[in-house]
Amino acid sequence: MAGQIMKFVTTSWDDGSPTDIRLAELLGKYGLAGTFYVPRFNEEHPVMTEAQIAAIGRHFEIGGHTLNHLRLSGLSREQAEFEVNGCFHWLANLLGREPVSFCPPYGSFTPENLFTIRKSGFRIIRTTELLSTRIQQEIAPTTLQVFEHERLTYIFHLLKRGRFLNLAQWAAGGCPVSLDRLVDHYLDFIEIHGGCLHIWGHSWEIEEMDYWNKLEGMFRKIAARKEFKHIKNMELATVQL
Ligand SMILES: [Zn+2]
Image 1 (cartoon, protein in one colour):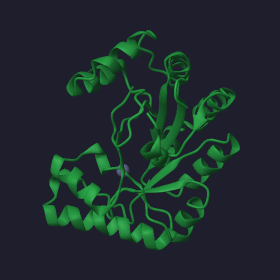
Image 2: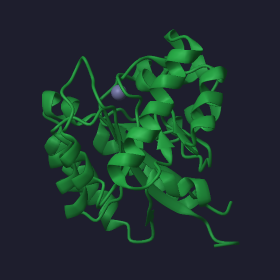
Image 3: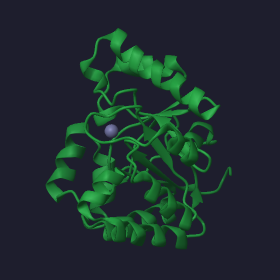
């Protein structure tokens, strides 16, 4: 692809809720690729059965999200290793292949956690950074969460992380906040400048907020852009930059 502008779309879905089955069907309907980050157990939301996870894993990527959906930054090194390593081996046994991507629950991790995640064998770490179009091979930011945040939430989110480029690219589109306008802006932006549109969310939240129609509208717009390449999160590990 040398010399060409790279335009990717990837999606990722956290927590392994049973509503992921509906999400997987919707992705399939529009030919989108996706990565589902699943824990084995989650105190806050029910998780799919292992048979359901394996079924989704036949068409989509399954990534790690710890064993028990715990905030890694609050654990001792031994507990964090148990959660991350245990998750890697649980998924490898369940799927019959080693998982590649990992997403720290609550977007929370320390430099020591990063070391643990890499040592366990994961090669892509998806963060919760928003409004990014960067194609990044190892620590992958996101563009949009399927949740209508307020304008100030985005501003604080980006200022706290010092992401002035994300802020400038968002401002160039008039700081949109509706999912409809956000997806239009980022598709147009990446169309010209290249990059990766990374959409993520929680299917339990899409269900709670009744975002299914909005989500389908986003997928329809994305599917209409034939020049975008659809990739799983794991494919970011092997992109030739
Ligand atoms: Zn989660």
